[in-house]
Image (cartoon, rainbow, N blue to C red; front, top):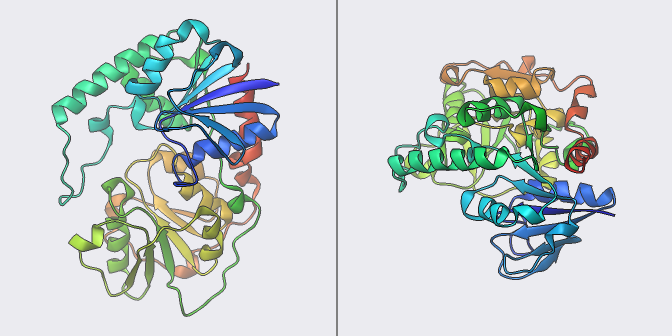
Length: 352
């Protein structure tokens, strides 16, 4: 049996089932393919088993030579990179999975926070950290033992710009898969008075999630109604328009499809995403989906007939005709996010 050690800064547990859940979903797919998976959770205090996956703490003694590959998700210097450098001679193969900020110059890419969000981070120290981070990453990426998975072509291209290097001979693009709950059934609208026309599911803190653009779209369309699900402080600092309802709660992933059936369309703008997994899940489910007109959104969803792109500057005055919003017609393109196929593609690369 092949075996993989997965490095993660955090991981789901019975106490917090949402920590890096996208890493866990991959691991479950690997185990279905008869691959043994052990997770080194750098935040764990004790060892535990979660849904059949063995999770160990940093205090555990690991026989690294027994693993066919070590997979590092969103590596940071403090834990992942230090661990890998210390044990490089004992490790057969390393695969980095880059998801975003860990391989970007944060100040150059991430949008400014909302004006009421106080940043405790010193911009010079952030710039300095990123320079050191990228220099160290380049050093380990030059090792013959290292390969790279990017979640999008956009991510690969921008990472290469920040690294000022290209590793094309040992990198691959594998999208994040969608959850099976969006893959195994399809959108079917059921009109009801209890729900609005549009739904958004977003954290309310963090300007990259662009809740302000949803509010702007609502103001531009006063005859339409909008429900925003998510937790955060946005509406403590901003007025709630009459045609917007804020539902202050977290929606479990497997409950989202049933919820979507009550709405005519979703609104999921963004200012920055390496992929935008939930956006992809909603579009794949088949509901009409309004997204930002950004390169990565086009990369993921250009072939989807139910997706509508709006430039972020245009949310302020965009008039929506709900009759033009149609569900997905034909589901062949959804296969690009097929969980099983993507797991096989990743495993083939990880174990090669």
